[in-house]
Image (tube, rainbow, N blue to C red):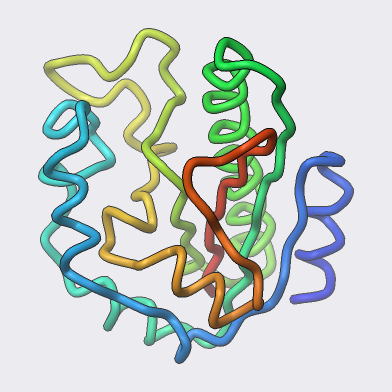
Length: 177
């Protein structure tokens, strides 16, 4: 199943790739969730803190047997283009993860779940103030779950994430089953 999932990701877009990763190497830190508090969208996005369940995400993730890191890498040339790529990369990754969850569900993995990279951007005009417009499609960001994505990606893949991004925006998501 892992090979099939990775193949599906690579077929989905030239910007997508995937790697099997070791769940035991994931790095969780409370200080990552503190950064959510300082985000301009804090308490406005239905898939981010403080509007997500207060669960032990590290324990939840450690209950799974399989993990695939799905990542999107999109080039950009200007600040204006960066804004567009930011939304496009997030949504490409998010929608790909949802499709992969469906494939797993259809193959008798009913508890398959994914975590997105960065906040949900499915709604072009932002989240509704009263309720989520897509509650069945929203997914929690890795950062919102307390994962230090920079350290986790380095430990699991050897890839370095640096800030600010220059000329290429990378988004990382996770599929578990």
